[in-house]
Image 1 (cartoon, rainbow over the protein chains, first blue to last red):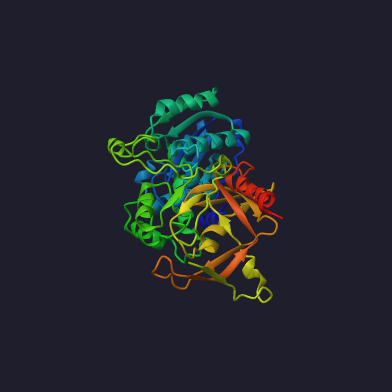
Image 2: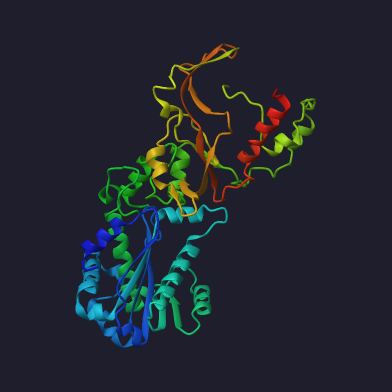
Length: 313
Length: 133
């Protein structure tokens, strides 16, 4: 990978309904010298597009490289500035020889599918699993990891305990807003954010929709373009193209309003005004008894959900 | 009331019209009519190395398997130009197509012989034993 163009070509070549990984070569110095690694994510909140997890690593002794790259609070950096820093990470000799990185692109379809499994996976679980697998991958590639810094939106204590259990010999720091405190997390954040931005730029719809990111926007529910997309691109039967995270309430509510009602077999939503199964209202005890002479069907049919019906009604 | 089903489609002319692809989804969709299956659903149907199918519908993960209709059976799709207003009026349907096999989908569960549709097909053998000659 030598430029943003090659990043885009790579992202375009991948199946955007699945997860995939993009990574740099491991700089040889990272295998010999003790390294620090930062973890951050981009695109957690948006209703559109992938979430990207990024890690960046470099020798403890080479922290100055990060500073000269300009890896500071990534939220304060403009998109152009982030693109510029990432390009330097791909091309300039100092960063290439010292800083390695890996990104996992977690598809919106994977996110929807995880949250709509029979046993639901929360976004937190998806996130943590991605972070852990990226760290494991870096270790497997021979990087000599001494310190890990993780940015988190949730409570840091539980996350830290979990990571310590998996990586007992590494110093682990989990903190909120870590990307503004630790330059290595800020580098990871830039990798993640640049990857997510470009993944949206090259998004192509398998559904055949002729539209690009200038049509659907950033994916944040507050973006007017995204709002319009969520409102206008409803398919009555299928709901949305797989750019959309179906499990987001913005999308769920719009489909409830605008698409055909869809009920999955096992989903039983317990609403507060619904009575528990088998509970009769008091008035039924005073109403005339139902005619009980209906012929009861044999268990064979009941078990197989077989009924005599008139399909033409 | 009587129900008439007319078939103006000649088998020989256009055999594929009776061999269309069909998907049996594990949910109730409250709509009757055309659906963009080819654009929204089929691009995401994936077969793994063990021949197991996966897909996604409204964000839900699906596991599928190819199924044939029981021997001697076929499925047809009929349309009705205009539904009569009176409940007891005669009804007239036109055959619009059909299928002989379909893909059965479960929601996040591998298809197995315990699925209702497999069990329901038991009736075909039993019916034959009871009512057959």
